[in-house]
Length: 235
Image (cartoon, rainbow, N blue to C red):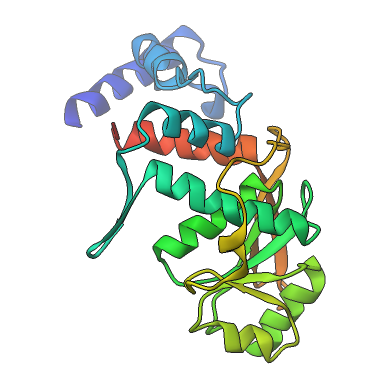
């Protein structure tokens, strides 16, 4: 650090000698070598990501590559890519029968669980976008979000279902063995998502205190996720 400060000081003195009429605010303290590092090398961050794909298409590619590999683990519960694919396909079929189309917003009220991943994938495969809701939100907040997004139903579990039902909304319970979606086919629905399809909407408090939804498209979500895979060196 001291050596770098010395270089800056020498560069500053050289700038003064070079043009004694120069304004102080225009004097340079950064060396040419350091300038190249700061402006060119540090900013050489361009990466080629497959942003013409969607989360759904990339997931299905992974299913074909390693269907028996473990996709998710929670405690002593695990699910392979093929199992996760088939279960989420059933959810997507059911959602489409309930009127879910491209960019349709679907509420999902679940704690972190295998069912949560099944639900998110099911919504995305149906063409919809998921809207996460925590069951411990104030009822007024949950009600406002659900009314604003016009969700045809809310994906939830047996623990959270009463909260949604008390607000008068239909639910699809994902952790029940007799849930309606389990009667649907395990085959894939026709993929209708494109890069600019909505992937999810996150509600914030908003500057006025009224919840506001930030809309995220598949291309933006993939850009973030693929960057994090690189940053975290995930294989």
